[in-house]
Length: 189
Image (cartoon, rainbow, N blue to C red; front, side, top):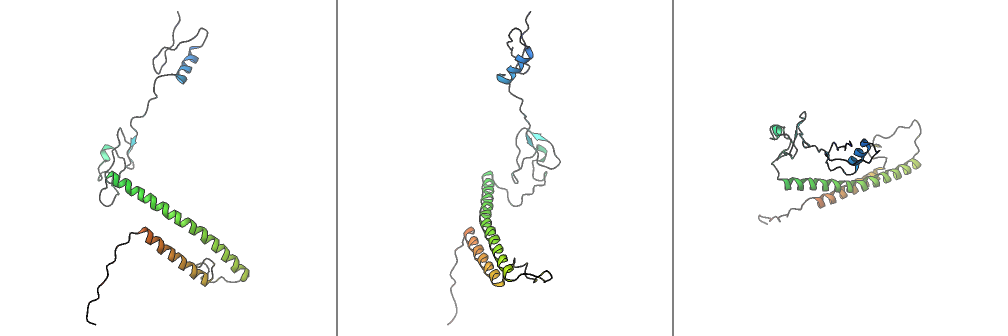
């Protein structure tokens, strides 16, 4: 008259010792060595069209914007595709994303030292200006004070020239140089 409990997940009989509760034995079986696999969601690919909640079994990507859509919104006209220009292949799209990521990293790497240097210089110049020209409470501040970040006219001009040269150097590095053609002078001398 001994009943053997059965696992509700894998339908396998669970051995129970005399005097042990069946619920505890089944719980230990489920925690340790139950062979059933947890039910995984099948429909995980959600449509990216605003307002659509459909999920599909497979990914259905737009050839132009490379976003995932349901079967009814898979065509560019159905989901108001925002991609401008010609369609890219998957390798081309991946290369475009890599280049944008790299250019963003380069821009951040260039800007962060400039900002740190700018902060240091402006703090230094502000301290020098304040020590040379202490402002009285009722004294008016010159109109161009905010434009030059507290720098003197010469220091602001020097800073502008440095930034201009730096920007020109960066642009030369980032752009491909095209060969220049020598112009031939024509005419009588």
